[in-house]
Image (cartoon, rainbow, N blue to C red):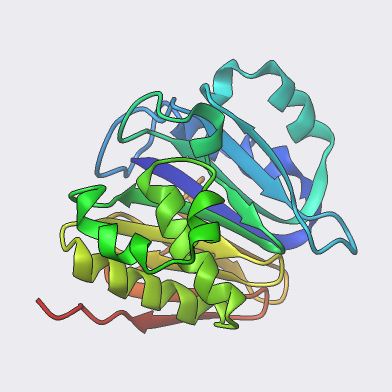
Length: 251
């Protein structure tokens, strides 16, 4: 469905993480190596990043493939950051909502991406949507399943949940309403990364105290990449990575 990546580390050009590695997210847009659903991620892309001393991230999103965007090459070469989240998209419904449907979604200090699909969309999660305040439903950026998952997650974050707790509870609720869903979620606030493995691949690369990368698949052949088991919550900082099993909702 998609490939996504989040990174915390020393400030570096976007391209050092997203373009230059031999199997970077840029290449994964047309030649993913471990994607379980879909083959080409050409239905949009986006990158969000944090500037020094500014907790609110900037975003660059487009509706077309990343390789066709000449402006991104310059952006990736000159913009430096110590924290980013980026994604390339294979849309469940091609063309729906264009750029607005491309991750990362953003609000306040948070950036979010969803790799997967909500089964039975939209009827399966109608009750979850109906439980949200009307103003939050009206604020949806797009009409796709990822935008609703983001709204459910954002509601919990604004209520004070930690990154990991908000992700775990959102996956539990959506999987309970739509059991065949694939819910690999990726979230950052610029200081930590939280992610779930639920139906697709997830990996992490950790250089303790310096850099941590969480991605749908490795961007190179470094032997330090570790695969995250399915049905797992990952929470990472530059200092450490914690993995916790996710509970299956009752059938």
